[in-house]
Structure formats: structure tokens, C-alpha cells
Length: 237
Image 1: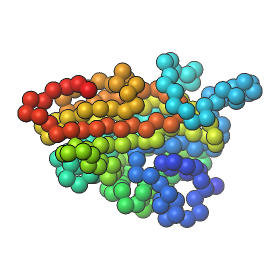
Image 2: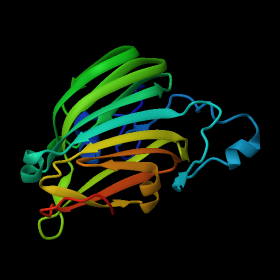
Image 3: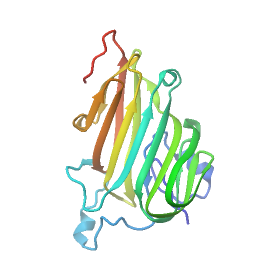
Image 4: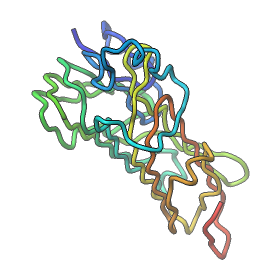
């Protein structure tokens, strides 16, 4: 039996084309374990406290280091014309399981390839998905893709959407540490807003880039608005 990693849901893949069609265009990864995450103990109170999907920003890490997702999104001049951005993502501390897959919407992904694996028996690109087998403890998976996730918004502006970012087991959501780096051509556009607004306190903005470092449970969707650059570029919301 193969477990699935998908943008929105976990399911057993019977028809890979059907599964790919159900995928979202975002670049978040949903982790579906073959066993209950170790954060959950045998105490019934632990089960009652499992997050059911509500977004909660955590102020301190759990006892067990959580799943770590590092992403770099490159928005270049061509992205502003076509909507395609370059995305590199690495997933650390994956759960042990027999198999999983990363599924993209076929019409919104291209140039998909595997960059790195550790403690993984086999991994390969199959259509618009990455298939992985024999995942060991603390496995690492890194992939590259181009994704059509940038869209026009307002006069001369754009918006980039990422997510939902989450780690889900059945109906429970478990901690995720997300490190997101977004690069953009500040001679052409400026970052004007970041949602959820709470992320502004968990990010560092510099000319042409923003870094978000956040620990959370539940489902996190990120929205960035870009406006045309003025003659005198400035930082700030």
C-alpha cells in the first residue's frame, strides 16, 4: 500500500492521473504517515488535544523536533510575464513509512526533478508526481519544480499564494517548522502585504527578498501582494 503526499488530501492512489487532477497548484506538502506521529502519547488526554486543523502559531518547539520544510521561491522578470516561479523545497525529518507520493496539478507544474534524498530507498519522477519508497527515520527529500502560482492582482500588481502548509495524520494536525525564502525583482515590484498578518512578526524583509520562519500547527495559507515599484523603492508594509 502506498501512502500519498498531496496538496490537500491523503488517499490511496489507484489512478495516478486521477490523483494528479485532484492536486492543488500550491507548493505545500501534506505528510501522511504510515503510523501515528510520535508527538502523540498513549494518554487519552493527548488525543483530545490534537489539533483539528485550526491554525495555531507555536511559541516554543515540541519535545520531539517537528517536520522541517525549507522552501525557496524565485520570482524573476519572466515570472511577471508568465506566472511561472522556480521552487526548491526540502523536507527534513520525514516519518518512517513504506511509500509516499508528491502530487502536483499537471497543468501547473513543469521541470520537476529530485535534487536530494537521504534514508530513502528509491525515488523517481512519474508524470507530475514524485514517487518515493522505503522511507526511513529522519529521511530527507528535496525537489525542484517550476509552478504557476503568481497571478495578476490590481493595476500592475501580482499575488503569490503558498499552501496549505500542514502535517496531517487522519484528522489530526501536527507541528511544522516552515522556513520560506521568497526572492523577487525589486526594481519592478515591491512586497506590499503579507497574510496572515501575524507572519509579519515572524519574517525579515530585505530589498528583493523576504524570509519567513514560523512554527505552527493546523493549515497555513500564505498570501503575498506585490505592487509596481515606485522610482524610489522603499521597504515596509
